[in-house]
Amino acid sequence: MWIEIVLFLFLAVCAVYDGFSRRVPLAVVWIGMLTAVCLQIGGAMGETNIVSAALSLLPGAGFFLLSFLTREKVGYGDGWTLLMIGLFVGAYRCFLILLVGLMAESVAAVVLLVIGKIKRDREIPFLPFLLLGMGVVVCF
Image (cartoon, rainbow, N blue to C red; front, side):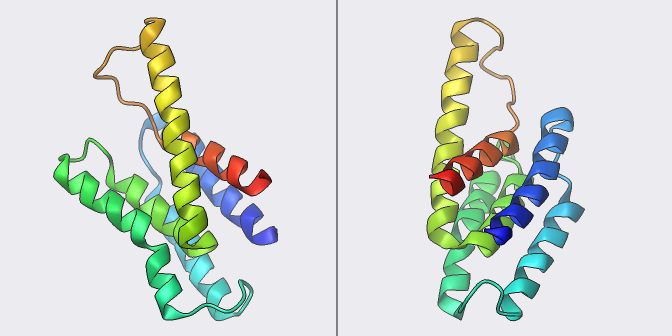
């Protein structure tokens, strides 16, 4: 459980920063990734093999590809953040966090569009929804 708290702290800093500035603090993400790697090497996350570590990077790698294909409509910072999440919690939970975050952001975007608070071309920061997704996945 304390591993999730460490990840939550890193993700909370990134989400607040992204929410206000629409930028991801890559230094915080890289420190988080380094922390996750050190915890894995130290054995604090249980037994990890190279295959599961590589699989945990798939959601982030997918977002990097999506960023490239959409000419950064989806930012590279989201990909870096998903890499960090994957290193902390593994592929399965990272995909769940991503799924819940995407669903929450979709619902919020539709509601805001319907009530007229935003236009279609408005950018919505994603990391606050990833933080929500992490909270849901960890609690349930």
